[in-house]
Length: 279
Image 1 (cartoon, rainbow, N blue to C red):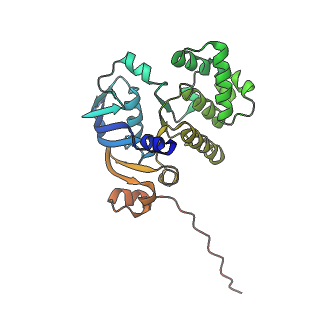
Image 2 (image 1 turned 120 degrees about the vertical axis):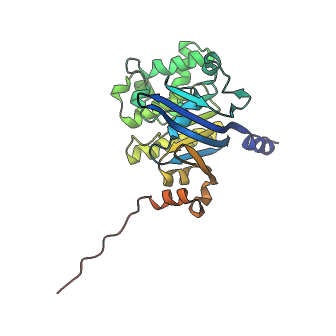
Image 3 (image 1 turned 90 degrees about the horizontal axis):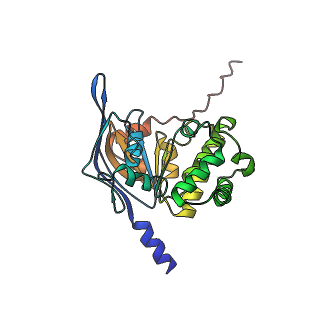
């Protein structure tokens, strides 16, 4: 019975995006950010990849209702389970953000409130999304900090974001964003501002939490090799348009010209040739 339930949850579509377009008003006129994005996301790890400026980050912000004021959003369909995101007002979106959907941003030090302690920010999430008291929020918050591999959660609880390293701040933000127990997590370049060791640790934490909580993950990145290793399926974005959706295991065999170009552009380690002995 447990296996059957797991199978049902695994195939359930959580997010449906059909012909998503986003444009921005600027002093130089209208700039198109997204020109036609299509995909579905189940309870899986779905990667979104493309070159710089291809519009990847606009996808996550559009889903969360966090586009800037100068943005215009259009879509034939944008649905999170039974919620039509095109017709949701701000009140409805606030009830979804944090509780049902959450987003990890690229730079945690910009996303966290610099004048509030980490504990105060996590407590606020529990209070808003679950209606918990301060003492209960602290208990749950400390447990969440442990789940993101914080060895001294009490010390972290009292710290301000500026007192943390990039890796620690990213872990704190993950703990805060997952406080509401969301079903869908959007991670926008969550490791690009970190060193290799911290980035790998954050990826491990995200993977553990997605697996243990059965969440869907939308993983936005420019790093094709990383997404290929980390995700189940991949959506390739070119100039604001989705041009291919493919299983991660089949990525290297793709015959789409743009995907092939991205694969060819990946950096490779080349062994130095041994110096020639002229003696």
